[in-house]
Image (cartoon, rainbow, N blue to C red):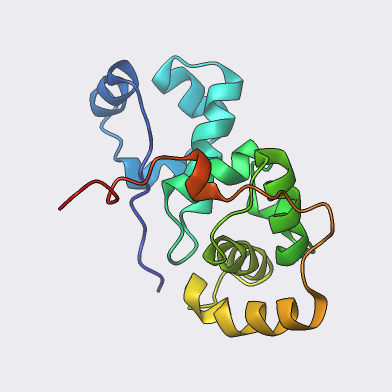
Length: 163
């Protein structure tokens, strides 16, 4: 039996209070119907859609809230929507939308989530896709329209200024 994950969700204080009042744990959110959660949290359908997506994406091994948020940024709200997608193409789409190229491990995460969407029983982590990505990029390279700016040039790196 697969261990139930406890997703990290950016819930408001009121949403957390409403969950406690209903005696529902964060790990149980995916057990509820969206309309039930809408009533319990007193939230709009779009907010519930986002909460469910964040929780569902984090059921994949080694997928955290930041990558789950990236999938939502790309317009995906369920694993079902990712079935049949191509991890390399998702990375390319993501980089175009962001306007900068990302760390190569992000492509590994896209490969993992696509694989997990097809087979939720896999027990791989994103780094299990590194060799596959390297081989693919060696053979195919990146598209000509790939952004020229790197992620570390536009986003602060927390460890950079630490001694």
